[in-house]
Length: 400
Image (tube, rainbow, N blue to C red):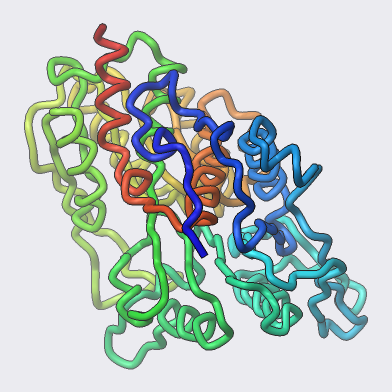
């Protein structure tokens, strides 16, 4: 069977105006039609991706032929009164190119358990994912799991006698027939070494976050004389080195001194932040991390940057968890410690976060729809993995 073709602009995307691929030339039916399933808690993101995919295919001969109103298949993970559960798929998955979307961080989903409403934990989300895969009974042509925030991602390596949750999760999915994992900003992408024969694509939201920054703050220029990048710790250096390199900005770093003799809430407490880098006085500062959990460390960092004379401080994170609420951030914002938190819609955001003036959200559904469309016809995603060119085009447009 001949390989399907897709217009190359989907991958090269040389200009902002050409970001939407031209599907009018895409006339042949793929050997495996696309199907989406959202596990409980991932419905919002799945629906956004579904709308993007429908829009992508609507102008093509293929879209007119298939008359697709939605790519989402009806499914559920109901629970019995004692807490046991099962996965159900109400439509056929036979021969489908199936993409299962799972959000392990969504604690906004609850279920009744002996008279109490219990929020789903990451463990239960992972179990629901396995239930849906099991319900497929091996019928799909291919199963891809889209798990933006990797389950067990913070337990990616072993120190002394510890479990390897993330590696074990990947091996379980591989044994169940999953062919590919699509994730974003993995805490440590080297965990993919545990499944060398399974696809593992680790994407980033760099371009989307920068675009949100420039739209919300048009006065901020992505130039060396007014903006610099600071890494919150040594673990986030790779992420911040990318920003600094592609934008041509100065890079600084905070070194976290921890008390390794003590463990509080599963981690070693930070004793002090020590800054290493150029003078920040009068500069706008951009700080990027993979997630904001309690937010204690990043707020301390922002305060130190402000005390050193920084003009504006922008905090970016792929996942905005805010496990202790937004009160401390509201107070810090009122005190002028930071100017914005930029994040994505890749995982659950607590309702009060969306009401905060300082929160800026980037929608990643369009990006994910491109990834699915490319993978569906077995085309390379190399250019989608590396947003460097798109960021350079953004800078040229702004500096035009």
